[in-house]
Image (cartoon, rainbow, N blue to C red; front, side):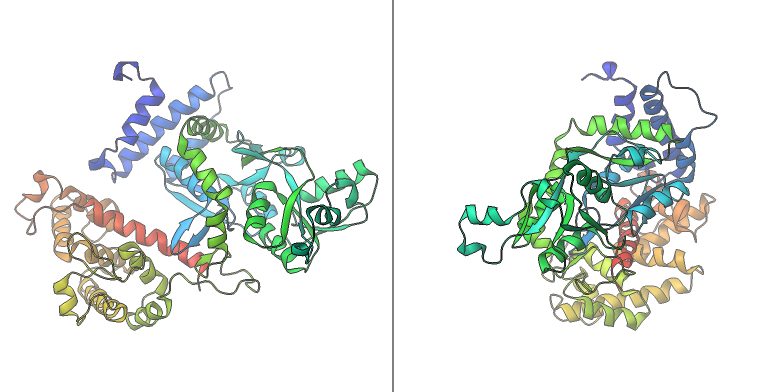
Length: 505
């Protein structure tokens, strides 16, 4: 497609996808670019719609981030082997990237709480698999559907199924919804399952005893209770139920109890510009293979799901939840070591874990092309200086790496007063060296920026050290630096720490 033929949508998309690297960290520029992009999208998607006194998107852009309400779960949002993952998590980040805004997650404990948070203005949208119902339409506006699903009955197969014929197994299963008459079905509190079962009860002319569980119990919890024999029956969305049936022996999820329903995200009705922008994004996403790859990754790949659900390194229950069903998860096999070493220098161990994951993904044999080694990716000279004779030994490596962090804490403790700012300088220095960070501080000073502030200050001039107009300046002592790496390193670790704090004590 030639540039001359690009329409307004494609032109803005081209600018964003080809990343104006020099200006990526310039907050004012990015806000203006984002405002221009979403204004074009909203106007084109809403042509003919009545004008509003102000744009809901303008307020979000001015704020500088997108507040997204969701719930943690083994499909929606979780941490696995140190990596934040999930269907909703991936999709909402793809959308946020498309409008150049970071995401701030607002976690709810139940479906009812998600609606309450949305109505209270605590989030801009609910990014969760919500079935569209008439009752819910009275409260919220729904996006175009992400996909379709139907409700199915989750039940146990006979304990002696291996000794039975297929016909004998089927005889013992509920295959016709009519046979739910007189049965007790436990469903998630606040979900739409109870409503459907009440309608079904009327349709079949027989009473179904519907028990709504505590709203804090997830559909996954109820499916686990069926598998354990605590309850006999529950109802779930087919795509989720089939995943569990493939992962947990003895479960069956093939009896439908509803027609297909739209699965969508929800917004407040008074946010038409955000709605139009999301729907336009969804329309474009459906034209790309990635959209369907993500769906397959979380709803079709039963083997990966089974590996995750049975792993001690899967965390999907927030630290406030009752973990009686699974127990406390682990970030990595090195948690005890990281906790011990973090305590030595007064760090949150989850922050240290975020740094180690970012450096090596917890691989003690990791080696970079530059020669950095082990869990904390120590260069040979640094490893020797801080006492790691064998950098591939996890204990030696982490102890030396934490000693280096301790040294950096003392160094920046004498220079940066604010502890939150100081942390950013420490993390950046761990990645690129304090010399390059000091260069960026000197550049900030001569350009009338604050040398003691990271954002809109030193980070901008660390980025500028990739530009010869800056790294050849007389105040620069350490020359060229690929400043995008330490800037992204800082943001990655701070973000990952927040994910870890949600799930790990």
